[in-house]
Length: 406
Image (tube, rainbow, N blue to C red; front, side, top):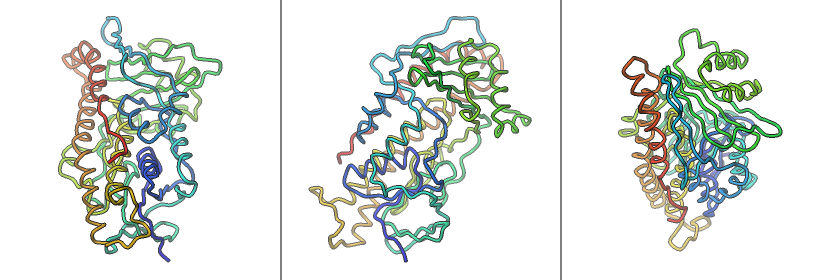
């Protein structure tokens, strides 16, 4: 027996849950399929810029998350190559916080009806079925849906169905961690970043007790064995912090082994986003399934939040009649509705294509300059990029995805 749904979202990550909540706020039910048996909390935390908080406000959870995460007043960028003072850029007039991923996903999930997320539900194949898409799950379940949204990450099944290739390895890797200081860390609230000698590292407090940190580098062949061994990962990071202030070392030293992880940095080539099918008929992708990017702008999670708001708005415009009455329960011309859905997803793709290209390509170039080596590029990176980068980050964060109103 086939189960029929209006909207099926593959993946209960940031993009998937934000889209689902946006639809819920507009009175549209969705089913979210998550392959794991619980919410997957990877990455620990991430920087949320002003554009992300606009999206969180649009789906109604901004204020509750603000109460748990402090405002970041400024960023200190220091070179580990040149003997010069750190440059400080004020964030006055901007909203930047270090957001704990676990709290974000749990907050999104709690705002949804209890039967929205279906865990242990891995999609193994997608088929055409008239004006619907038929999904086969690993447990034998068959679903039919009017709208299929792929928010299933860098190894997206839906992106593959749309014709996208696998994201490309940049040649760089990242180690991330989260340290908990019971009783308070005493570091203040500034974002500290260190650039030089082919490394980028830094740490950012989320609140009084939790501090998120990161290190990106270009691994050698012998570094591959580090990925699955947190003990070696921690030792490796400490070995790379010889020229870094003691505060950074104390944050890494305080990190528990289960709160440290490594991953290769992958991205989607910009020309794939330019020429590829972000949507096709009643299918589209969002989040890392659409625009996997390097972390050099801190915009990966923020862009996923933007996707969710824009996508919910475009789908609602297609599924809801003028005046806000939902088509569900009424006699609907399936072909006409399919055409509206197709147009709605095309509008979403058009709105997100250039934003995605901009973020992916800029992040890649910033990372390339930071991680490359050579006397000239070392000098340019450490002399000029450390001063130029904070302003660029703020410009990218000025984007406004709008509200849920269509």
